[in-house]
Length: 503
Ligand code: HEM
Image (cartoon, rainbow, N blue to C red; front, side, top):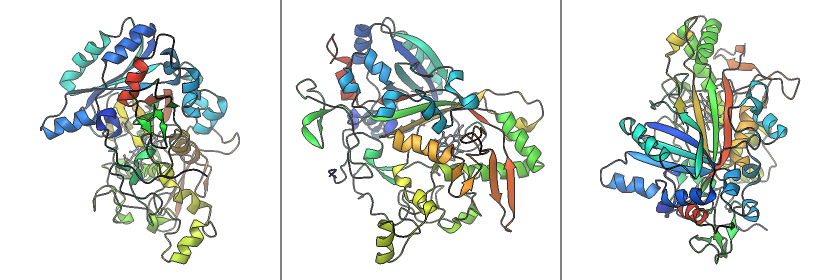
């Protein structure tokens, strides 16, 4: 029988990279460096000398009334861990999908929608084993970014070669189609006060173990991670579930990176032609996203008290009163990416109802999908790239492509249960919550699924009971990506100090 654990407060802030607790929004400029190890000893020396910004650093600055003006975050791929000399037996204890990689096999690519023009064979980097060893994320205030990047670049040789520098736009809160972004995030229960599984209603609160390894997750269990002999790793904390082992995963998180190119002119030209004008085009786009372009929830959904959301903020709504999707289409992006609603299907009132639902003796397939949302949450930490075009500019015939998109970045404790489930079962699947023949209206690749069923539909029910059906072209293309591990600072120091022959 699997051991379960009570929630555990997170206190080791000086061991946790800042991104786990913050999108670093005050540092609006950023650049991502993708590196390969060329000289192991020099690479380890660089790692030993490079300290990623921790949550404690950000908190200390905040307490002093300052903001840090630069930050560095560092993540490693499985080939990167191997290149740095971590023993295969240790790497084997990381999650299988991390070890295999984002674009390691056709089956994973099919499930994630990485077929057609999204096929990894077309990617700039990340296809098969072609994953960079290190992802270094540099953040700064706009005036300080260039100097910050130059300073880091000057230190890389001879340990690393720079494979790619990914540029980010200075963030303005909006993604390239024009929508306010980064609004709905799980609220991590850092204090360890919530008992997972006892929520009668949808909650934004999430166990810390869904983001960080080494803490109890929504099942009240500890996600598998590498546990070592403490004699070989004295600097690592002991594992919560086995005090005789040192925990290499604790305070670390898996980082999914996907570079998503957005065809902004195609998006707005298609919608304005379909809808017959910009006002109606924006309304159609808002139905596809499931929110107003300014981030407002659809008013008719109403507001309700949701743990983790401030009353009446942009996130205090659920779909309880709109199970049929007459207000917010069932296939809208935010509804596919997080169906919200009840933690228990149908929000039963009585004890008997609750018991029947818990035992799986009532409810239906759609309820089941909805009830599982707490196991499929991610922390989004993406950054926009390219120029911004307003919807009106983009809708003009012949508008120049601003070459814009999203460096999609998600943190989680289990790539398969969190990002891969959301992307595969909800976003890319042509069958979702009673819909078929459609996939995510923003992200779908529009390829037939699984070879025959169309996926380009979008159903938008009108308030009068009418139903609009749209056939959509592909607006977003995956152009690079990889799975990385964002380690705790002590785990990074352990890797940097590996003996010459490996661990
Ligand atoms: C170019 C690609 C994408 C665009 C333009 C986009 C845009 C948006 C927008 C405008 C929102 C609503 C604002 C907010 O709550 O932050 C949103 C929410 C969200 N998106 Fe995306 N997104 C993209 C890719 C993805 C991907 C690949 C995933 C995951 C597989 C994802 C998962 C989510 C989630 C979980 C939410 C919050 C849903 C909620 O809790 O209400 N998005 N996105």
